[in-house]
Length: 196
Image 1 (cartoon, one colour):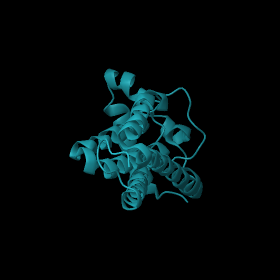
Image 2 (cartoon, rainbow, N blue to C red):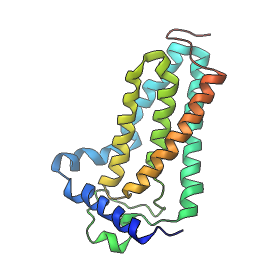
Image 3 (cartoon, rainbow, N blue to C red):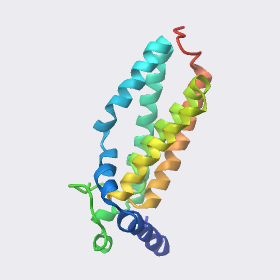
Image 4 (tube, rainbow, N blue to C red):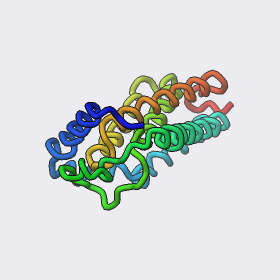
């Protein structure tokens, strides 16, 4: 499925703005690191420990729901949407490469729409926000800033168009909303220190 030419041109222009016009030395150093899952291992370990220590068996179910959310999001984005749309990544498109500054050492051969980084991280953020907001309050919604920074990094380094990231964001939020509300309805977390 080909993107309409007008949308492709507009998307390429937005990519140019983020990747070239709005670039700076600080972002050039920091932003590429946001994409690497290894950078976020301490955060994931904290979430697992937080869930198990504070919620016991329900915390274990929360971890299972969190993992299932990622798996579902990745399947929908990578296996269903990408393989149906077959949009080339900007870093593999010769018409776009002429103005692109690639800030990673390797451009994946996979397809571009939707961004699975965006889908997965917004799915995680939405699941976290929906399930933990009743326990820790509205400050948990800062996880959306975390997800957005990772999504933005995909465009900044030149491996995705902005519309890829927007599409991934919508997919992720939808999946996280479904899994988060399902978890709250079927299991739910009862309060800090509750192990029942």
